[in-house]
Amino acid sequence: MNKINIIKDNSTLKKFCNKCIKEKVLAIDTEFIRENTYFPVLCLVQIASESFSAVIDPLSEIDMKPVWDILSNEKILKVFHAGRQDLEIFFNLTGKIPRPIYDTQIAAMFCGLGDQVSYDGLVNRFLGLTISKESQFSNWLQRPLTDKQLHYALSDVNYLIKIFPLIKKMIRETNRAKWVEKEFQHLTNKKIYDINPNEVWQKIKIKNPKREVLNTLKYLAEWREIECKKRNLPRNRLVRDEILVTLSQLIPSDIFSIKKIRGIPKTLLDNDLNNILKIIKSSQKIEPDKWPKIPKHSKKINVNKGSLDLLKLLLSYCSQKSGLAEKLITDADELRLILDGEKGDLKVFSGWRNEIFGKFVKLLLNGQIAFTIRDNKIKKIEL
Image (cartoon, rainbow, N blue to C red):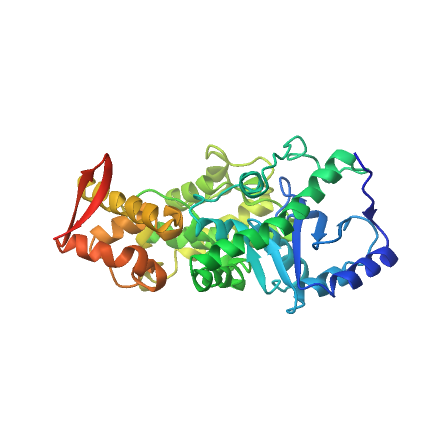
């Protein structure tokens, strides 16, 4: 195993980045740790062209500006695999999202390679190689890093730069380049990464929600988000979702009532508990017409199981015929909304999704198509 040098000084980094600037395509990956912090800790950045590559150590005393300049250089295509978390890290550190980008996991979903194909699955499929997962769950914060860790980190981009033209060719041959590009545009939307504390409550699961409860939950979730950013703590490390829901339902009137609630973290100081009480009391003064509306996804939609199964059968059929991953086309929640009579703003009835699946949903609901079995395979029949 050859020894891999890791870039830790500004001079070497500048030379490497000057080479990168001349490239049209670069594969990029990161290693990070997020278990104990709100913001992920960037531990390594790996960059590869077709002819050279390197591992960069952002934890050393190094100025990362040359790397940020490469990421923002719109003349260079940045290739990632499942790059959403990488993009989030770069956005948090620089306030910018790398453009243009290419995500091989998303592209693979347009090539009949299944839902969210893994990186090692792609390497095996296109290069016939097997990646050792021995270093996958390494502590990337430790220094010095072992040669095994560095080889693992660098192999990610060295293989990715080889896979990119192969998967791009498959996309081009199926005339789906524009479809793929639209999905990439969604991935570079700042709203995905620039979290609004006022909207965090919408991601908290709650059974049979009431608007009054959601109103209190909204303000408690906002407080938690702001505090977690300040303290750089994971949300559930400060207060778990289910505790916020319980507080919103019980509406405690004093600190002692809060402390009696099962699961309240002992790490919360009296000052935190007093702030929670203030938020609860102020939320009670909000006029009902300003309470949040119950999100559509929170409503329990009772649909006929047989009807839902039939739509799932159509989805499976359309997925197999098109080679597009089911998850990319739609999900069970959207199918339930369709059966509930919701057809207006659903993604499945616009763009390529409508072409692949949406238009056939309408035909099925209008009784214009049916299914049969021929040669032990499901076949669609137009009536």
